[in-house]
Image 1 (cartoon, helix red, strand yellow):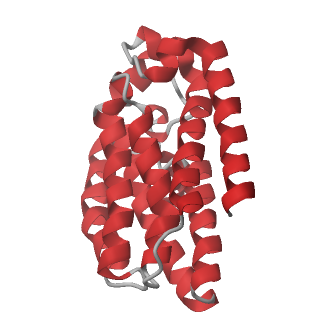
Image 2 (cartoon, rainbow, N blue to C red):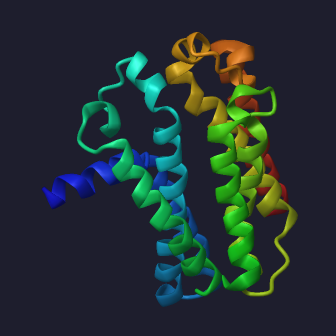
Length: 218
């Protein structure tokens, strides 16, 4: 029972993207710090990502039911909406504490939590607007930059601008699989307005621009 609940909580966090973001954070943390603090920073980042994923599943629950998305724990019934809300309410102060009082420090921790706020903001509002890429841009720029700031290093241009570019590209790619269902649900972010073909072109151009930026400035 306990194991199944843990599995449901992890799945509700959108586990793949959560692990990817945590791994990126560990990579940068290991570069600026060393392995010990890097693990602590990665744990704090992981806790923040849980909030983003859980808030998404809670807010989208009715829509997920309408589209019969049985792979999602709330729709599958492996965890209840009340349980997930309670876990998220506990996790919010936990993530703040872990990030503000860990190796990231107040400055780096606040920048990272700004990224988390952007993720939640996307779930609740921005994904319905033409400005849907904005939270992705800020959040992905904040992730590596907060770690540099934790060592009193001014984040270089390639880091925060590259993060923003790749973040927006990730947004266009992430939306592709649910494009038609999103439109039926009234979700009209920029990718939905451009359509699948336009989103693919935008993602390719952004990834190319990001790689060239890092090659010339990194």
